[in-house]
Length: 402
Ligand SMILES: Nc1nc2c(ncn2[C@@H]2O[C@H](COP(=O)(O)OP(=O)(O)OP(=O)(O)O)[C@@H](O)[C@H]2O)c(=O)[nH]1
Ligand SMILES: [Mg+2]
Image 1 (spheres, rainbow, N blue to C red):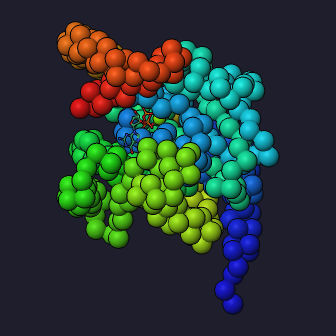
Image 2: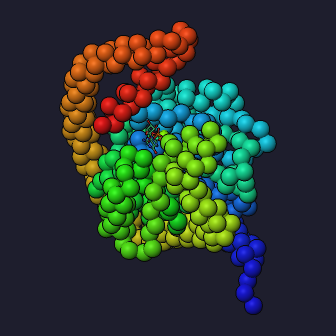
Image 3: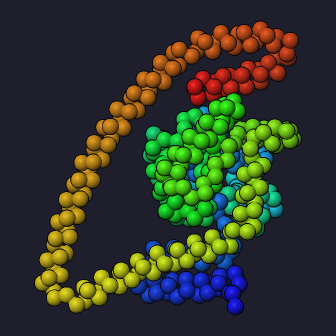
């Protein structure tokens, strides 16, 4: 007789608990914590759907579009810097969890103070993650939507935060864009993600930049590029305009929503979350359990060998190990020194480029604003100020993207 999902889940939980008690006996708190987390995830039925990709591809905009509201801050510069989890709750609430294990509830409009590179540079506020509760139907049944910092920008700590979260992901939406098309670095990131995440949805965002013909070309190109990295195994790429989808949901424009490509992605996500998710939750729990037990086995093996080894041999090994460690630390210090010099150089180039950009754009922008104000002189002062603000943001975004 086929075992039911509930039976298999119970068996996985039993095995994970045995492994956790072994880790406790061996006083290995790291492995014990990972196993406890795997048990908790399987028991609580939570499912982490994580949005991943390089910086500025539109990950946060996509999350806002899925939720149908401008919940999280987005920008034309690398922005999200902290893991932000959005789960179901009867009323909207935001909680900041700090590295010292303390947490604090904050008003939702203060989110940018904690989760953006702009207002929490280099994570000076020591935030570990932020959790938002929201009464949204797309978070039903324990689904947790997770926004991650973009990788590959100058802010290396953002890349690190995103990579560190990979082992916790149950499924991912990987966001690519038509501008620029898939880079080699994105291909490498994808391979890494594949190691950890059993199910990935691929989206090609910002298709609103292209006409139908170019859109087909961009899709075919990106599809092939993804297949070069991951091999041909039924990869489907969803063309998307997250920006259009969000605007369409906010204004209730169904025709524009259809054109944005989001409904197709939502349909498939929802089907997967009802049908495929149980299998993935089990596979992930089993994978975590196997990884932990194989590490425990390795450690036990090491302990056994150490017990069997004559004292002299052991002392020699320790001395050789310490020597090797000193060498590695020296090499690390050298590498850091070189890297810092290299980063300083790159930052200088970017700053110079930005100065040139500013110098060339400010006079143009002034002219454009004058022309815009002239054109809209019939508006009230307040409406004109608001119009100019939107106009400046859009013009700068467009120029900066170009
Ligand atoms: N034209 C167009 N612009 C988009 C689309 N989606 C996002 N954008 C814009 O792209 C910029 C970056 O969007 P974000 O959602 O902040 O991107 P992100 O990937 O979360 O960026 P990081 O958090 O820095 O990694 C913003 O200016 C968005 O308005 C889209 O579908 N079309
Ligand atoms: Mg973001």
